[in-house]
Amino acid sequence: MKKYREYILTAALIFLLYVVTFSFRVLGRNSIPDQQHQLSHQYDEIYIFGDSLSDIGNVFDTTGGAIPPSPTYSNGRFSNGSVWVENITSNLGLNFNSNNNFAFGGATTGFKNILLPGLPGLQQQISLFQLANPFVNQNSLYILWAGLNDYLDYFLGGVPNPAQTVKNLSAAVTSLVDVGAREIILVNLPDVGKFPIIGEHKEISSLFSTFTKAHNSILMANIKSLKRDLSPKIHIISVDVYSLFNRVVTNPEEFGFTNVTDSCITKNISVVNIGYPTKLTPCTPNTFLFWDPIHPTTATHKLIADLAFSVLKSASTHK
Image (tube, rainbow, N blue to C red; front, side, top):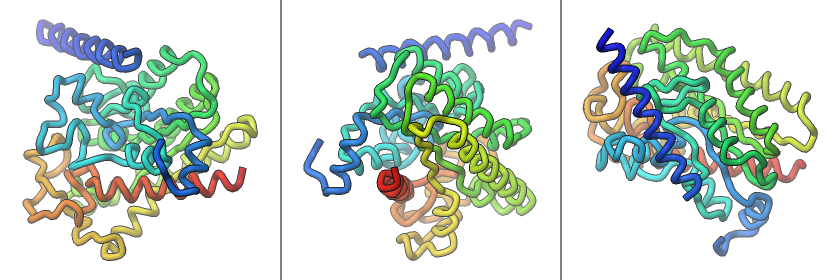
C-alpha cells in the first residue's frame, strides 16, 4: 500500500510539472519559391498533436533535460536532428512556434502515456489546447499523428485495439473542429512490423503488421465518414506514410539509404526500454532509416515532411 501511494504521488507530481511547464510555454517569412509562398499565405500558423515522432522538446523540458538524453538525441528531439513538423513548417515558409507543439513522447491516442505515468496522451493534449484556445484562428493548420504507442503498449501488457485507437483520433478531430479548426492533417502509420524493435521475431512482426494494416484501413474509412458528416468547409487531409515507408524499404537506394532494417543506436543507449535487443551496426545516420529501434533519423523525417508538403499542395489545388 505504501509503494502504491508513492507511485500515485510520483505520477501526480509529474503531471503537475508538465502542466506548469507547458502553461508557461503556451502563455509565455522568408523569400521562398512561388508554391511555398502560395501555401504559406493559406496558413497563419501550425498546431501539432501526437507523440515522439512530432515532439520537439516537451518531454525533454518536463523531465529537466533527462529524456531524451543529449547528445544521443538532438536538443529534445527523439532523433538525431530536426523532425518532420519542423521541416514542413519551413517548407511552408512559416516560422516554427514551439508553443504550438502539444505533442509528447509516449502519448497514446487516449489518455495513457507509455513513457512516463503522468505525462499526457493525445486527449489531454487536445484538452490543454482547448483550454488555451476556446476559439481558434481558422487559417491555421492542425497536425495529428498518433497511434504508434497504442500498439507498442503490447510490450507492456496492453491489448491493442485498432478500432478504439482510430475512434480516439476521430474524437480528437471532432474536438478541434468544435473550436473552429478547418484544415487538419491526419497521418497513418508505417508498418510497425518492420521496425528494428521487432528484431527477427517473425510472429511478432506479422502481428504488428496486422495491427498496422487494420489501423490504416479503419482510419481511411473514418476519414471518409468525417468528410461526409462534417461541413464542406472542413478539410481532412490524409498523409500516407505507410506507402512511403514501404517504398523506402523496397528500394532504399532510391532514397539514399543503405540500411532500412537496423537502428543507428542500440537499444541499451536509447530511450526505448521495450521490445527486443538490437544489434550493434556501423552507422552513417543520413543513410539509415531508423535512429533508434522505433524513431526515424532526421533524413527520414525530411522525407515525411516532403510527402506531407506534396499532399498539401495537391489538396490546395482541389479546393
